[in-house]
Image (tube, rainbow, N blue to C red; front, side, top):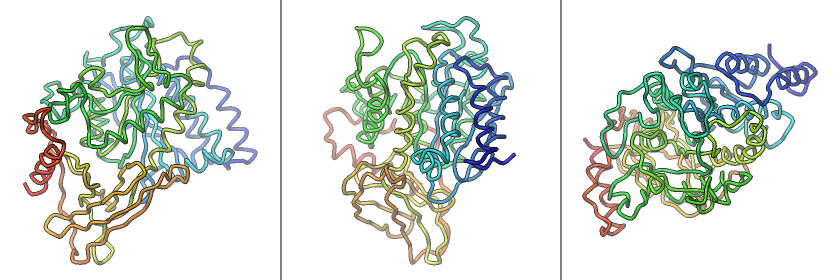
Length: 444
């Protein structure tokens, strides 16, 4: 049934569906039924699909919301929230269900949410580890076997790693998410966890090339990641205070570099950034991993504003298309801001699109089609998140009339060859080293 938002039918559906979502834990059958009811009631701007199955055969459901929910539209960035990667960390799972309820009931009523959904394609996965959730029979604040999937694997140690070879066997849930990332043009993401109260940002792993000798693993976009983490923490009810969960550990401003907190191999946020061209942070939302259900309403209130403001950041920076002399899109062209090269160069998608998250400032954007002269453009980036659209600039290669050949970075430790760079190496030499790696990838 298609719903006319704002009409009588829409209001009746709004009331009936919303009334069914209580502040309680929704096991797999109830979660699936709820998502299906939401899609049926709001089919004009939602799309429900499964990106794969868990070890035990449970669907990995994703609800997509936006003006064009079923497919990517040129110029509209893709955003995602993923929760319950560790099955016994449950707050994010329920928060995202209530966030879905809030979005669908606000669309067409609240002007900010309406503009957000009209200009962003939002993907929400309430649970990445449904088997682990169902295996957690006795809720516990600290640890249960439900953290892992049915095969006993930690899904947040299961992705290819950019710094060392991860010998873990790729799990069905991990493979589904990797394919999902490959098939969409995600720009920004957050991964919801529990057991602490902090926003953690990449890198989770590292070596001397990223500054780990100083106890910090710095990405080329460290300034943007700090901004993203602070956006969430300062819009959260208390995360920004940085008090943590006990007196032994504090997080200034409620944020931390992942490596500075503890080293993690095979994590999802580093994988998103290196191989998915997607900036992802990890949100630890509760000191207790699996708190009593009567606390869920407060967790929702504490996170509501932060969830909204964080999505707006997908409109930071600059976006556009790269085309040939005939106006045809050039996929796999490299588009990067000078001074912040990625070890796996950021490339245009099949539509010739690029998205670069950048803070306000002056940048030189370098567009490269291998075998042709690069095009440089100096741009002034402003904060356009309130307008729900990044700065737009297109590049045209007048001498190119053929499509760039397919290219991808191998799922190998790309930073390993830079490990010999010591803490004493000057930052300029670090940039040179990364640039050398980029050139090797381009022309190999």
